[in-house]
Amino acid sequence: MKQITRNASLVAVPAVLLGLTAPLTASAATPAPSLTWAKCTGTGLDPRQQCATLTVPMDYADPGGRKIDIAVSRIPSEDPGTRRGALFLIPGGPGGSSLNDPSGKGQKLPQDVRDAYDLIGFAPRGLAPSTSVSCGLDRGDLAISKLRPWPAPDGSVAQNMVTARRMADACARNGGELIRHLSTTNEARDLDRLRAALGERRISAWGVSYGTYVGAVYSQMFPHRTDRVVLDSNDNPDPTRVSRAWLAGYEQGVEDTFPEFAKWAAAPGNPDRLAGTATEVRPMFLRLAERLDREPIPWPGANPEELNGNVLRQTLLDSLTRSSSFPALAKLILAARAGTVPPAPAAPPEVVLQNISAVSAGALCNDIAWPTSAAEYQKGVAVSRAKYPLTAGMPRNAMLCAAWPFAPKEPPVRINDQGASNILLVQNERDPATPLAGALKLRRALGDRAVMVTVDSTGHDAYLANGNACGDETVSRFLADGERPAQDVHCTATKG
Image (tube, rainbow, N blue to C red; front, side, top):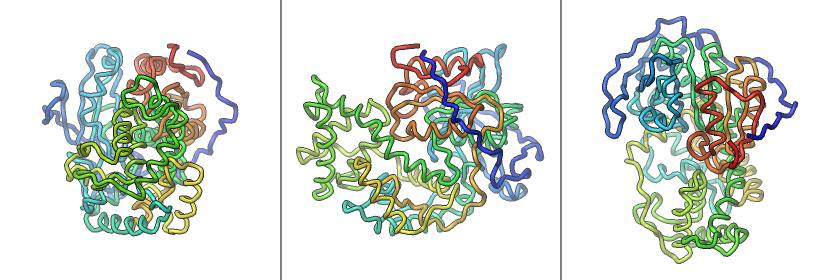
């Protein structure tokens, strides 16, 4: 393992928790709820997994008001004699669930980690089977290329603003009171209620993607309640932009990652080879996307029911998250070059998409106020399209938050260096969704509270997924034994 000393420019951020008051953050003021564990419903679950329901306030500013349910799960420590505590599996998203993760990715954890912890999963507030929410969006607005909006082929955002108003109006009309109380800070408060219900003085956590922001916010709001915290594939914590910074990160993340796809797509012997050399793949892709802007190909069963330039670009973005998706992307490109399309990809049931979309919208739009000016988005899109043509301006475009009718109920939490030094960041060098550049901003914000493991690997989700053995072993040692590197490290692909 090659050691790299962090630059001394890690400047501490002032110890300020913006907008947080003691009544909102102190769970000790209310009695700890209790949990009744029972066999989980569903298929494919580990028979040891148990499920329960946690009741929490919908509005923590009104703890005696309406209550909502949070679905939780656990697989107890496999060796009670060596049990250390509870490991919360914090999902990405917003809109992701870890309810089945104790049976899923939790079983990839080394034995000594599974011995040390009860593995805890949950469905965040708003996400079924927790008390759920829906915006009742039009089917066409459930397309990923609408939820993560792409400008028109000429770069215009005018239609995006119309779409944003239509979608935001639907959320206001159909989302009920709950959609106004979906936020990262409220998810952190829910997790502290869960900690109390489990009878744990402190918790450990493994947060992934958006879950890294949740984990960082929890560690800031409840620093005395944290044990060992792993943040994997890290979000930029910029308190002035929050979710806007995450969306903007895609432009650099795709640029970081595309060369790996290009090398794969030009490799001799590849049955889905796209070009003779890696340098030819990028211009080929851009030409094809521009052609599909002008001449979309009908795609029955897909949403939208055509393969246009933005659908191709969105498919690229999604496929870069893991190399196992490269062949399907290449097959789509080959088909489109021939004027055809493969069978439409399978999609979750509409009711599931409605739920996920509403939870995502609520958290992204409630955490911070987004600009409402079309001119501001148009200016950003123009700059982004010129500098990052692969993402064609999408990362700086207006999503439904541009027309969100609700003001944030509190300012974002400012992540700083005040708190326990018990955080380990793990980050792939090439990650399209949470790029290294954003992860380094979280590292700087945390200061001496954290150590960062940078992994020479490609894809989203590093630990036990798309990273490498060196990174995995470093994280596992920390969770099992508390052995954290003394300084930031770089994990090459060939060294453990």
